[in-house]
Length: 190
Ligand code: G4P
Image (tube, rainbow, N blue to C red):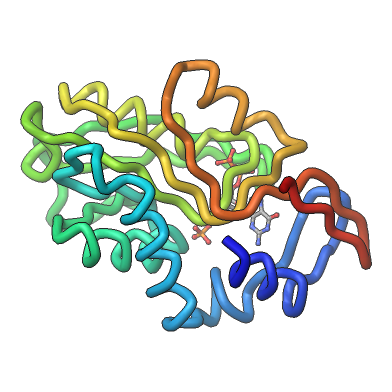
């Protein structure tokens, strides 16, 4: 997606060989117009998959997921990383370890909102080692729902998440794939 790559080139800051800062438009301040375009693009790519629900994880997955769900005209459900006062029973859970942040989160979604009748599109902002997406896929499986695909805004193609998901035969669509980066330099996959 050219507009996204352009935005990353203009505003992204490569902090190290593995961390890209995009908090001017994606995961702190949010550019709503760009999110609308991102939602349209995911909806276009997955329009024939019969998606009934978009599933994401808090917090930065929510904006692109909502815009996608709006366009597909289906609800969006986000997995919680922290215990909720009201979300206490009928839960599907998965453990998600972040190699980037070196923390483990127990993520949860209510069985009221993802069921065996659903065909799910998983959306997230970043794909690095794939733990978050794989955790969401595990929850979809626990619910007995079918997986229509995974949509990622920025995939770091040099980390192993993309391969881990594609190897499972899952349709993975990433709007920008970065093959290499170092301070001052970014290489996108064509
Ligand atoms: P993984 O799920 O693919 O294994 O990713 P990883 O554990 O490495 O990433 C965990 C968190 O770090 C995620 O946010 C993810 O969005 C973020 N992250 C990973 N790589 C980058 C990067 O290069 N730049 C930035 N800005 N973030 C990155 P999170 O903990 O779920 O936080 P949030 O969604 O509440 O923002």
